[in-house]
Image (tube, rainbow, N blue to C red; front, top):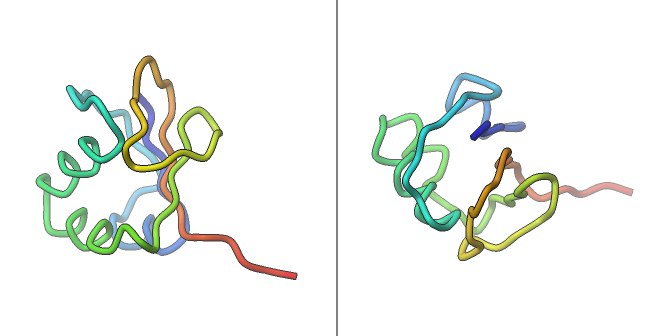
Length: 81
């Protein structure tokens, strides 16, 4: 699946996107796998309270199943006016 990183998450990991082979069942499982890769991923995902997730461009919770997801995106909450 394609994994996309935005804003400060992208800056901490150092890439905007990557193709990921995973056995993760949920978003939380995927985050755990990514955290275990390298320190930069662990840092980027150290506080999931400040990270939002979308599967195939739909906002989901961390316990959402990945199923046949083609794309998972991680980004900080949006603010603005």
